[in-house]
Image (cartoon, rainbow, N blue to C red; front, side, top):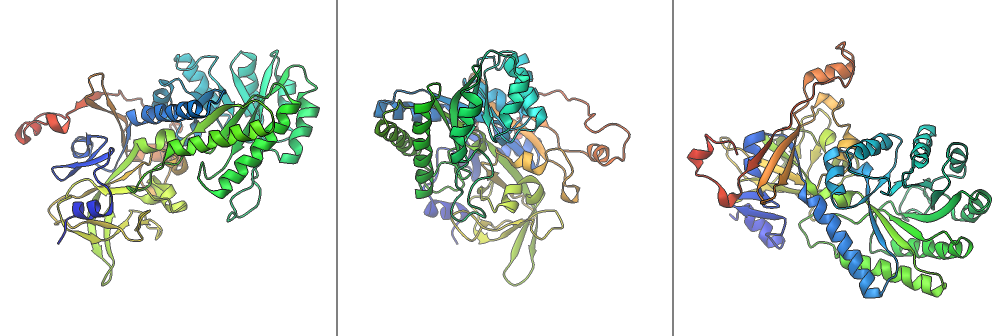
Length: 497
C-alpha cells in the first residue's frame, strides 16, 4: 500500500517552498515541528514571525513592478488591517517594514497610543480609521487629530462627520469616504450595510466638507468583502468605483487617493498558488485606463491587507488521542483540542486550511474524520479544499500521531474569544512564537501558556479577584536546532532544543 507521502506527491507538486519532509517529519518554513512539539507539547498554536515581513515585502514588490510596467505616476502605501490580529507581536513585526495602520474600533486607539509610546509608530504614520463609529471611537480619533497624528477618518455614514465638527480643533482634517458596494450575487442582500451609498457621496461632500475650510476629502474607500478576486463581480465593482472617483476628483481637487479594501487571498490548499503579480497588474491597468479615459490624474493607492499579512504565519498543532470506528466505514481520529473553540472559521464558515500530519509520512494512509473535544456534533473536520475526503496516516496505538492546520494566523483568536470562556470550557492552547536570530537560527518564545482553571473561575465570578488580574510571566527565548544541525538522539534527551 502506498504511503502518505506518495499520496501527497501524486496529488500536488511537493515539496513546496513552505512545506517539506525530512526523516518522515514535516518542516514548516524549514522549522522542524517535531522539535517544537517535544519542547512545548500539544495542543499548540504557533506563529512563524518572518512570514509577516515576507508578505509585506512581496506586496510592495508587486505594486512596484506594476507601477513600473504601466508607468503609473501614483504612490503605494501598505496598511495593516488590525482586526485580523491585534496581538503585539504581529503589529510590532509588521511595523518593522514601514507599514501603516487601518483600525476598526475605539479599542484600537489605546493600542496606537501604546505603539507610539514604544516608538513603533510616529505621528506621520497613517491611521486609516474604518468602521461604524460610536461616540467613544470618534472622540478618540478627534483627540489624536488634535495632537497632530496623521489620522484619516473613513466616513461610514452621513452623520459621522458631525462628531468631528464638534470635537476637532486642529487646523486640517483629512477624510475618506467608504462607498457602499454591491455584494456578491449569491449574498443574502444586495448592497453592503457599510459605507455611504453612491448617490449620497457628492451631497455629503458639498454640504459638509467643501463648505468647511478645515475639512479636506483625501480618499475614497473601496471594500469588497470577499477580497481581491479575478472575477467578473470584482472587476465590475472596481470599475464602478473608479468612475465615481473620477467624477468626484473633478469636483474636489484635494481628493488624490483610493483605499482598496479587501485583501489578497491566502493559500488554503497545497494546490498551485495565486498569481499575485498578475492580479495587481490588472488592478493598476484598470485604474489607469479609467482615469485616462476621464482625463484625471491617477490616484495614490492604499491597501489594507490583514489576512494576507498574518494569516500564513499561523499554525495549530494537535495530537490524535484516540481512534473510534463508529460504524462500518466512519473512522474518527479524535484530537486533543476543539475546532469550534480554536478554529472557529472552520466551523462557522466552513473555512478550509492546509492540513498535514507532522510525523509518520512513510506510513500507509486511510480516510478519516477528525473530531474535537466538545460535546457539540458540529465539532469536526472531514474535508479539504481540494477534496471532499480527508486522509491521514495509519498509526499504531503505541506511537504518537500529530497533525497541523496551517495558515490559521488571522481572525481565529478574536472570533473564538482569546483567553475567554469557550464551549465545554475548552482552554486556550499554549501559544509559541517562532523567529530567527541574526544568524538565521530558529528561536522560540512562549507568548502564553495554556489557559488555566483560575482564569476561567475569575471570568465566571467564582473567584474574588477581578477578571484580567493575572500575574505577568517572563518571556524566555530559546534557540531551536535546524534539522541540519540536530544533535544525536541521545544528546537531545539531555539538551533543551
